[in-house]
Length: 198
Image (cartoon, rainbow, N blue to C red; front, side, top):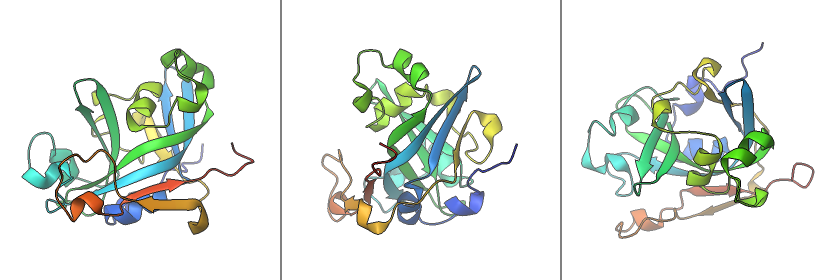
């Protein structure tokens, strides 16, 4: 089998660059002999201790330690006492940065996802960061997983990049009382899927 995973070098750049370039790439989850795959549609960048919206704003902690490590790892955290969130560690080792995967367009594994989200309309299965983690059975056990290695059960492969005209750039969402300029940083990237893939 050919390893089509994104290499570590893909992630070894500032988060804002990686977030844009992740649009169109394929997030894949392998579990219990099943494979679930989706095209990444939306991502947000969080960059460094200076970014007041980033978990690393308080420096190195047990929770954020993975963000200071090797790029291309999964940073999976729990929020609001109920939701898991999937991030990709970026930039150089020692520089805390990550990209939150906010939405995917599912192309494989619909039966698995239907069991995971039986009450949701298919159009709402993976259109939010917590929703996609529930749909793909992503939780804290995957924190630190190597996204460049299919053996970990979660990885990202090359796909078809989104052209600029199909990408909307805007401020990140759900930041609450984060001060400016961080609250309005245009670090959220959302792609529009082409009609033939919808």
